[in-house]
Every structure is written in C-alpha cells, then in structure tokens.
Image 1 (cartoon, rainbow, N blue to C red):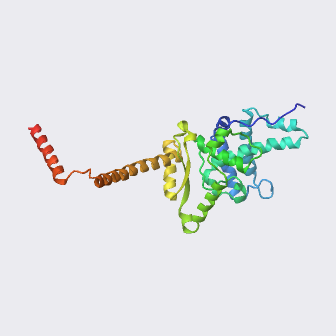
Image 2: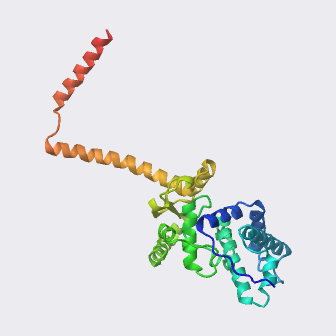
Image 3: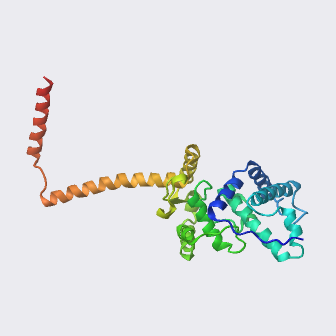
Length: 296
C-alpha cells in the first residue's frame, strides 16, 4: 500500500479559482438547493436515518463529489484511493475528510449568501458571520471571508494566507466582534425588523481591485434599498460593495465641494475679498451691452 500524505494547503489565488469553479457549478448549486429545501422541512439531518430523506442523502452526496473532484484536479488523491491508502491511519483520514469539509462549507456559505438565514439553526451553526456579505466575484470579499474563517476554524484549513494577505484582510479580532455585537443591540426591537446591515468595501471593480488600498465600514440601509442594490449589481455584473462605495464617493465628493465652496466664500467675506453689489451689476450690464453690440 503506497504511502500518502495530506497535500499542501493551497495559496490564495489557486484556492480562489477553486472556489469560483465550485460556486458556479450548476449541479453543485442545484444539489445544495435540493438539500437545503429538505433541511428546511426537517428532512436533512443525515446522521438520523429516521428523519432524513433519500433526496437529502443524494443531494449531499452530489455536492460532496463535485467538491472532491475539484480537489483531485488540484493534486488530491481520488476519494477511494485515499480511503484505501490511509488504511488504519484514521487520524490521517480524518485530516483529509475535515479539510475537504472546510472547502465545502466555505463554498456553501458563498452559494447561500443571505439565504442561510432561512436554514435551521443546527445547519448554519458555525457557518454564518453576522452582518457580512461575501461575493465570489470580488477577491477582496473572499479574502475577507477566509481571514474570518481562519480565526473561527483554525484547524484543517485547505488554504493558506501569506502575511501580506492576512494584513489586507480586514481586522476580525475582538474589536470587530464587539462592533457587530453593538450593531445587533442597537438594531433590537422595531428597527431590527426594518433595517439591515451592509458592508462597504472601498475597492475598485473585482478585476481591478487594489485590496491593500481599501478599508471597511458598516452602514444601515432599508431592506428595500439593499434589494435594489442587489438588482443593480446583478444587472451591471459588479459587486454590491463596489457600487455602494461608488455611490458614497460620488455623494461625499459633491457635498464636500458645495460645503467647502461656501466656507471659502464666507472666508472671503471676513477678509474683505468681496465685490460691492453696484460694481458687480455694472460689470454685468456692461457685458450684456457688449454682447448686444457684437450681435448687431
């Protein structure tokens, strides 16, 4: 029996490409949708044969097969070869299975997006990051997710992040957790039912993004506005983060230009750098008269 080792963790660029392939696979998306539908109806707990359905088993199996085939295309052994090669080495086998499970869970989170909120609590436990929107087409967004995932699930990671990539990923330490907690508390009661959070990442479009030049902020918007932003992002094939940041930048630049213009005017008045009303009107009248003479 040949020796076998767990392959090296994937660098971000390679793992990002693998996630995009997984998330955009139509069969994977259909299988996950079928499984989630069964789970919502109480037929998705696969460890309990008395309540789980055959459809849930089949859908979960298809999703796992697609994920493992992607890993195989990037150097992993075929599943049954891994089972045979690990033999009695149950610890190594569990490393394979747990690492593959992390790959699947990250892909599920990206496919489900906010629809995870509709799932049973037992199914989304550990996979949900409150007040975060992740976009598979935005490398900065996925890097953000992986940075958070590394802190929440530090073992059996299928990827590795360099020091530079960890620095580019927004801070997910206790201060970030405290901030989310404060947001949830402020949103309690009526406001929580009428307002949702959206995370703005000040990046360029995905293919041009400079993750090192961005920062992250959280604002509150109405569900209606968030839905419209999602439609706009889908129609323009840009991320919600990019469009929201673009809108904020345009508004801030316009309003700041107006306010700073008023402030300059007030400063000119205080310094005496003004033109008397009569002199200004005389100049206007002269300009009008000159224009009339030229027209004749």
